[in-house]
Image (cartoon, rainbow, N blue to C red; front, side):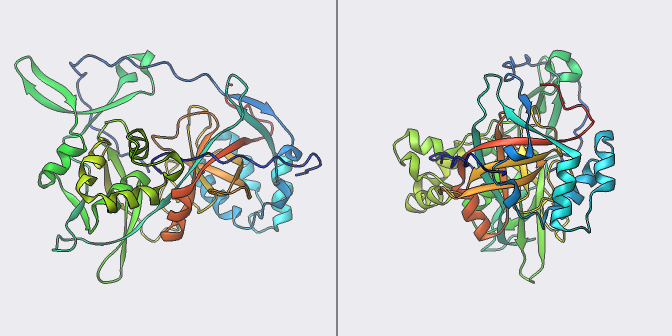
Length: 396
């Protein structure tokens, strides 16, 4: 996901007559309960408010061209095949129908729910992410000497809910060491420690730019073009357990950049002008992502729902408030602009920085142009969830 901070753009108010956003984590080894103290987990945010609405309440609903929705809808249904509330909609959606027939189906089979925090605030933040396209090699060369690392065998995952029911949903990562008191679980190596001795880890592929590799970790997956012209896809495998820290915010706090200057492009520009400070800055973000090779022929990277993402139709959400696979209607603006971006989306991914009720990460697609859009996107937004009619929505 995109790192940093920027100026939030307002949403144009719709006219009164309008009728109108790694990756599946592999199973972790089973380990004995940690002997280190269990961390204090802060309380979760207040629950979301789901308020029934009308399709006429959705800004730009009739203007959204749904021609590419059938692809995202079909992938969504693959990921929701075991969910009883989706069986009817997935079996009856007019995949071969016209845009008008698909819109009519959505209006007749789903109920829009406006999302808001517990305090009734219904405006939130939309950022963007994309799939980078890098040059690389399966073997180390003079040019390709920056590794994308595979998941280490000594990386442990502990689901705290299995040990303490009150911590359900909380997971920590670490490594097992011998101590005078016996075996203990301690935090896994941070970014600086991993990069200081990457030879101890197994590389998946080699690329030629440490900064691009850093941003690929933030995005969670990427395409690598090899010397023979073939492509491989590196997908999220796991993370070292250290909290993500946005280096854009660090640069602002230090007075190195202005808030309105911060974007992925702006951060890369600062690093190119300050190469001697690059390593120290990147190491401020102790979080480190490991990769695995996934299908390079799919239309997009695989999201948390387990299906390929669709450019400009998939979003990452906070699943504490929006169930994975939900249909989301997004009302926001294009990056650094006031032009409306009102779009039917599918909640097919998650991200460590995506925390909150009205919060999403917009998937722009693969390559340079997608990266330019994703890097600039930090917009104000409203969100609705379209839930299957006749079924019970999640507790709110």
